[in-house]
Length: 171
Image 1 (cartoon, helix red, strand yellow):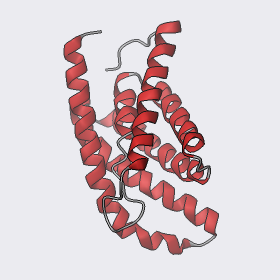
Image 2 (image 1 turned 120 degrees about the vertical axis):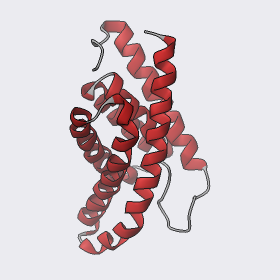
Image 3 (image 1 turned 120 degrees about the horizontal axis):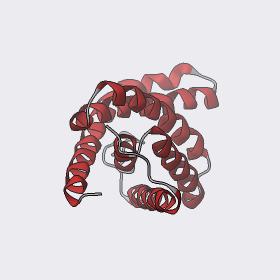
Image 4 (image 1 turned 90 degrees about the vertical axis):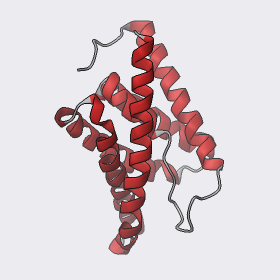
């Protein structure tokens, strides 16, 4: 169960800190060399913060952090086209996390994140289909589904570990 929301300056500080962490992770990961020969596949480590926020702060705050990170990530990276793809993938992934949050417990985050990762990739492909005005980009889906599952599993396990460690620290 999500604890009662923090109010005022405490909440704003928490949201700003988590947004800064997610943005930093996103920008550092963008500088790393590709993990595979398939272009566009990455771990999506900034999503650890989104998953953490969804299960600890609630869906509204997680959405605020996600939107701020996506927008600022596009601005700071200088790649405004990524705004469309990241927003589409992030919002679809957020919707799936919202649904799974109602069905699964905090101890099952590692199950939520792979599903959300697949839907993140699907959202990006749907945005690409809209931008390019062709469904041919969906041929990329067989490569992105396993990548989304593996990356989501990794980020989910990281979020699970993070929550367990922070729970030990107390409120």
